[in-house]
Length: 326
Image 1 (cartoon, one colour):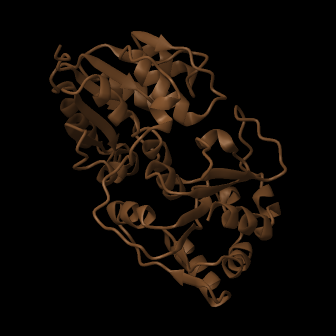
Image 2 (cartoon, helix red, strand yellow; image 1 turned 60 degrees about the vertical axis):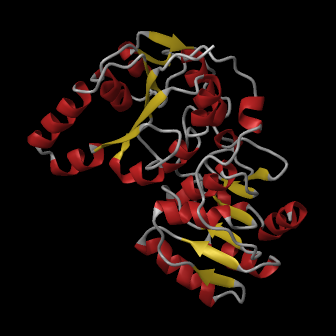
């Protein structure tokens, strides 16, 4: 029997890693509702990673950051008009659980599903939802993302939905060169493994290490690492699409808890994620996708951004784990 042609809106605005770790739901939805039309509402800076995705009907950029920076009332009016003028949705799912994502979802025509008060990152967000899911905050963020959406759509959840995924994004290039990507930046300084340790790590690894960077300060660190290692190469600046292609063709990715590192898991490529103030809850571990955590304790409800214990992870330990995976 033909499945209903559902119209589904996913609201997951930011950040890059959260978007990457949510996009696996697209193939899960289409397995159960092949004719579903899925629209994704995303912060405009991250829209390119979703653009032209074969399982998405439309990607709608939301200019929240630009609105915050410019404070233009006309831009606010335009954004609200765009949201309200959408054709009615059968399901609107706020997969982020923040006040800002709940407000964006509330402008869309249709009933909203999201996390309940105890599950949402910001409890106030649950006020905007018609129906809610109770999903423990402490479990893997990838499980949470999948569970809130599958529950909204009456799709039976099992870990196999995640474990049997195909690559989440298209990759247009193929390379057989053995190379390792090192993702040296992150949104917080305390999530960044020291450049000195990265330089040491490069010289311990068997394949050329390509340093992935995304800002001027990260580029400076990449140049420093290249100058202090015989096995490090600074990559050119890449678009999000180029970044996906690059990571998809690396033998291994090692990096901080940030979006580019998570792309490796999304593309079914090996990875090692380094954790200091955060922990393995941010990934979905597999035999070839592992985390290495510093000795510090993490309270996921009160993240300590001044926890610089990632500096205590020994480069030799990372190299040993990398060689085991390779």
